Image (cartoon, rainbow, N blue to C red; front, side):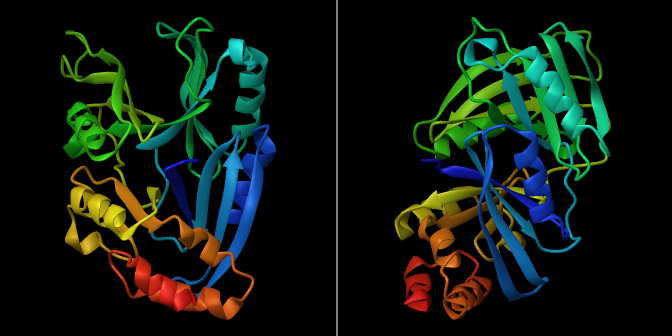
Length: 298
């Protein structure tokens, strides 16, 4: 059971994008589609879906935030796990139309085949042919790119996150050597870390970028108790004005949603009045109050 689930913000395309990804990636499916009524953005589609076993959420909530490469998803094609170079190339060709290439699909010093793409919806993917003899990693790994004001803080951030979550640790680390200006020697070329048993990646980039972390991609933390909600809220929230409806921003600008695990099931209730009560209760809160949500649901 996943503790942390990526949430994708779209203007109006959440369902369309989710279906596109499910069609492109084998072993994927839409789990549910809910319409949230009377939100500040109007009526919003909320889509729960899985890509090769990795849960995602997506919402159509207006043109307020744009997806960008500060958060991407690494797709690791490991032949020993039945994912071949041909599979990688096929998926690249499915994701490319209407999108743009950030790094060409070719051989690099770190991989026999790798490419970075931004698809037609703005979501970024890094496709890599993995070493079949290497340590096993999941097919999908969220990757955080620390740029601009937070460049050079990737290592600090992963140490902070591993202090907040259970079942957390560092993994492989590769640093920039001298002579790779503008990158600063010793900062993270690539690093991986585990949070609540799930792998993430982090990288620094000192090149000029016209993007940064924003609410277009947030990470939902599913909590079973109010004490757990309080823990993550207290540890992570660093921008008071960003606190709304269970959302927060941390000290690095990354957005999180701290939510009761039961909330998704509540919002899928067949009774529209119940769903509306829950939704309106959430809209009135900053940190979510599990007891109040249960009361609204009753």
